[in-house]
Image (cartoon, rainbow, N blue to C red; front, side, top):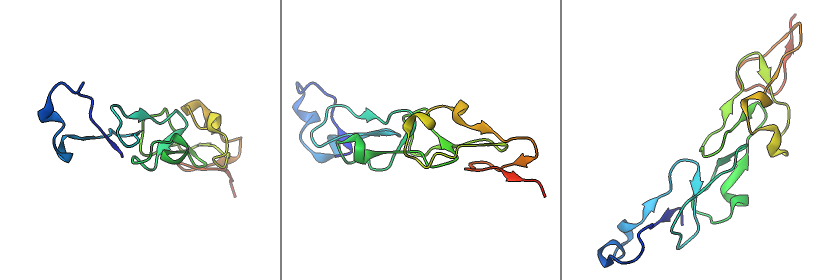
Length: 119
């Protein structure tokens, strides 16, 4: 698993050894015997390429991060922005605009889940 062969099966030489299997690309996963790799959905990142189920292959991004999909690691919200969702709601992590701006008198670094009040 985590590999695939996309050849239609007409060429025996492309199906006679393990090295004929190609690894899934970044942000994609496959089950055993796959002919394609499947992309992780937006708001998620790949954690295990070798499983055939998205529920175990892809996880929702953590607080302070988002993903447009097909990635192994989520992107940090820019400094001055945050996402406080703890990774339970994929719709809170599937686009850069999910990163909220800090309120007046508060700041944050990259990948923050909260903004800190100025002292």
